[in-house]
Length: 453
Ligand SMILES: *[C@@H]1O[C@H](CO)[C@@H](O)[C@H](O)[C@H]1NC(C)=O
Ligand SMILES: *[C@@H]1O[C@H](CO)[C@@H](O)[C@H](O)[C@H]1NC(C)=O
Ligand SMILES: *[C@@H]1O[C@H](CO)[C@@H](O)[C@H](O)[C@H]1NC(C)=O
Ligand SMILES: *[C@@H]1O[C@H](CO)[C@@H](O)[C@H](O)[C@H]1NC(C)=O
Ligand SMILES: *[C@@H]1O[C@H](CO)[C@@H](O)[C@H](O)[C@H]1NC(C)=O
Ligand SMILES: *[C@@H]1O[C@H](CO)[C@@H](O)[C@H](O)[C@H]1NC(C)=O
Ligand SMILES: *[C@@H]1O[C@H](CO)[C@@H](O)[C@H](O)[C@H]1NC(C)=O
Ligand SMILES: *[C@@H]1O[C@H](CO)[C@@H](O)[C@H](O)[C@H]1NC(C)=O
Image (cartoon, rainbow, N blue to C red; front, top):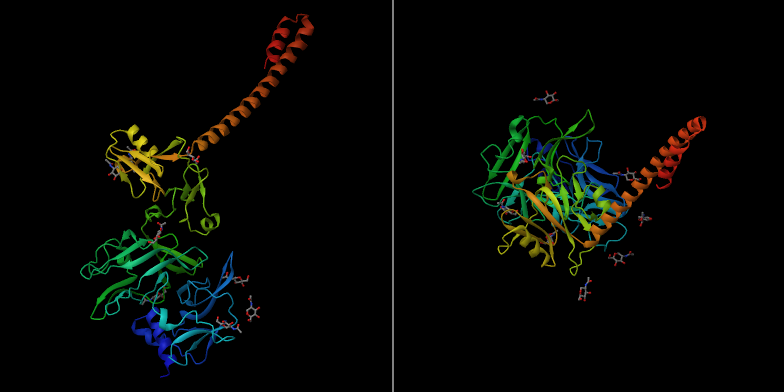
């Protein structure tokens, strides 16, 4: 068998299918593969090749990857050079390296250009997609973990802020969703031999079978379709939710079968700093009062993690003001301030600290410094929430109230002119009538009232 055959077989089987049908999901790389060429897996479901995505700011970007061959909407499932796209596809090709037999992306026009990808370097990194038959787990010898990393936004497939990682605790297999590789915001729960306790959907509709495999070399989860004709994927979405999606030939789009966590606002810091997440509103991310979206472009592409920034910076020399946000889940990383025994003392503690951005008093004093993350609305005392006092510059209040005052003045002026017009109409009627009975006393009185307005 030529090395190319073995390598491509390996690529497809590792990333696509370990099922008995894997033997048919193979192709031979007889010659180098350039942009426009594709290799199709034996069952016709997947294609390997260079594909193009368009980004608004940087023009077209080229990637080497595998996508669903039967789905008209380009849906990559694995990408070799996710973080280093190629600006120009015309000179790049996928070939077999003559000195080590690896699959490698080389530049036809310039041999000394360093390869942006080689099968030796980053063969088994999954992107944001876990396909039926693939393995999510770790290699016991190398310690290498196969997990998922979300895309940055709806058009940029470079690594985003969310990841899915299998637990490395052999006794308690699990799967966790993490923000910034550090904060766990969802756990699949305990493995009961058939499914994870927080994901009964996996078997509920009899569409999948789920397996946990542990042997001397590796330990992993995998799943299979009960009916192989279904086109499906498990993807860690830009929104931070892990979604099981099924291709619908009726709507010609991916349909979400289930999402975890089910509530969008339960994804840690999904809206970034200084925002309030609201499950029942669209858009669900909103800036706190006195703040504006940091990057409108990212925001539109579904990446809210940049959050919001202050319209007017805090000036520590001036007292400033506080704005009450009711019924919220408190931000992460509260600092408990024991010395303050009531709400006023708590407020004072915040004012005394230049980096304090908010406080709340719910029987004890909590203050927050710097960014406020993970705030969501519709949480009251019984659901563990309360009132958050957001610190604002004094100017915010002044500019808000001057806006208010200006509004009031305009309102009064308009009202007054309508009233004046109304009075003049009445006066005119009186004048006409009084011209008939020759008495002008009432008319004079009314004219005087009107002139005072
Ligand atoms: C990117 O833009 C090119 C040229 O406008 C177009 O032909 C191509 O279909 C676009 N690709 C995607 C994935 O939108
Ligand atoms: C791509 O590279 C080819 C050959 O080097 C060059 O002729 C062409 O102008 C390049 N295209 C872009 C869009 O840079
Ligand atoms: C080929 O690539 C190398 C490394 O990037 C670069 O130093 C060299 O200038 C390139 N040669 C040409 C002819 O572009
Ligand atoms: C994410 O983690 C990195 C490294 O641990 C840290 O430098 C960065 O500040 C974190 N991002 C946020 C928004 O906290
Ligand atoms: C698989 O699904 C297809 C299309 O829905 C159906 O025609 C076929 O009978 C199913 N096969 C099995 C074994 O259930
Ligand atoms: C705050 O007051 C100090 C001392 O009076 C002064 O040096 C500083 O510039 C002031 N800062 C601001 C932001 O006004
Ligand atoms: C008050 O809020 C803090 C910060 O979120 C929380 O840790 C604490 O449990 C709350 N206390 C009560 C009595 O609700
Ligand atoms: C608190 O919120 C829950 C859930 O939204 C609601 O059922 C309950 O009535 C609320 N309690 C109060 C006191 O508002």
